[in-house]
Image (tube, rainbow, N blue to C red; front, side, top):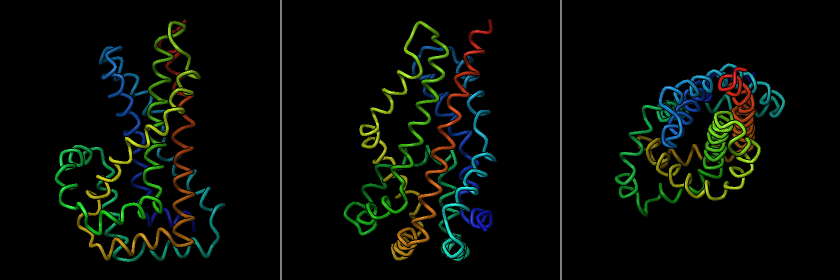
Length: 247
């Protein structure tokens, strides 16, 4: 049942984007730092990509759903995702999750904010954000990318720079600052993703997310994915240490 729910939801296709997303985030971070050559940044991003398996993340989510939700909740979630509205929203979420959409979101940010300023849709965002755990999930993913970057830099610098543990502590201490930065990006992403969904339909979606089953599903999925994208970071560090210090 948990597997059927995941297949019906957009999570399957969104999870498939995670290895590329983590890899791209680390590669861009390394290039912006200016401390490594582009070919080294590309090599590191390849190691990062290989450390994250969409299949492993998916399997973890299925296991967690089977444990975290009862049959009635799973049936309720499945029933929602089999509706035409849920299918429409799922297609929009999958399309917006693809790396190719990120530049579009950024390019249209100002226009979207101006268009919806003071609207009911804009006012619905806080409800959506709480129910979907959108900003919270985005912060977790941002932290995971930064931990991957820190792992790479610690391995690259060896004993000359701060340890991974020191960098990890610093990154975790910046969560509140990151939340402020990420929240605006999540809001723009929300406006972009659901722009073809009517306000009435958006309310129906939020009501599902706020329901007992929808809330449990979102909580379990976001926690499961967050754990799955954070745990491989140490593997990345050890692989890169061997790469930079083969002796």
